[in-house]
Figure 1 (cartoon, helix red, strand yellow):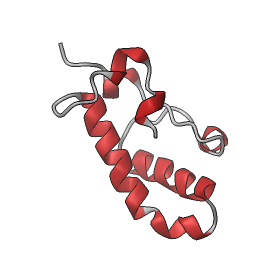
Figure 2 (cartoon, one colour):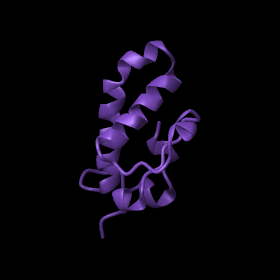
Figure 3 (cartoon, rainbow, N blue to C red):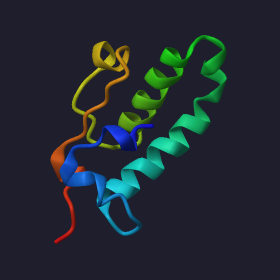
Figure 4 (spheres, one colour):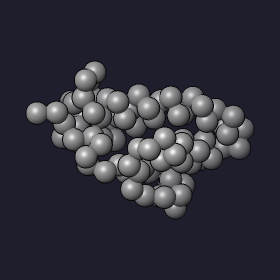
Length: 83
């Protein structure tokens, strides 16, 4: 679902070997690890996923206020397409 919301410059770059693909894989992993939060609501699971991404060292630019709206933003340097 997240990949559908990517900027046009990244949609077709979501393939193995590209930075955005690594970000999407990490989000999937963190989403699975946050499964216990699902009993509280999808929103709480998303917040836990976003926090886990930040805790893992991903350059997440926004915070809980945006995460509650289902939004997460990364520094361009983390997703910038390979040449």
